[in-house]
Image (cartoon, rainbow, N blue to C red; front, top):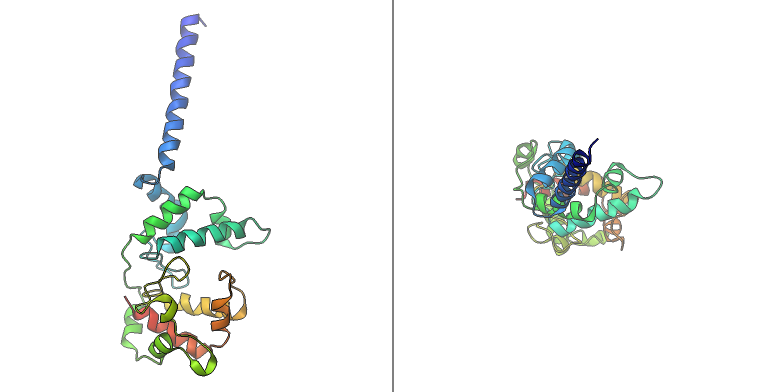
Length: 215
């Protein structure tokens, strides 16, 4: 190979490396919707829906959820994923960068929440006391009102208390039972565990169905 051809080859390789580096840097920027959409499509959509409206009642809808809460949960899942035993989300989140977590959380927080497939059936059923539990709690059982932390419309507050309005009732009920059994420990001060341990199955189902009606 002549010196000129060697020089041209080196220049081509250098240009290619610069292009790859630039592409990676561009993908890492938080304002790249194409890169974020690809991430959502490849990692999140199968369970949570491409727009954050989950078609599966056991998987939460992420559309309209508070961005700080979503991002915080991803970091918590990543920490869990670093342990020897972790769930599906732990295994997924541990492979995401902090920037990717932030972008995904922002993406889902900006998506409009749509009624779930089973929402019409719940909307047509009479309220069995869920509204009372949400606004008043269960004083005789030491259960505080849900609205005191999650907002009067269950819209969520700060990074600690997620939006519950419009969430799948099956998912909410399952998570409350996990809290009650001590299987979900994402609340560092055990607030939800203390609340749920004094709720019956009927209490859990009632308030979960009420929350699923809200928008």
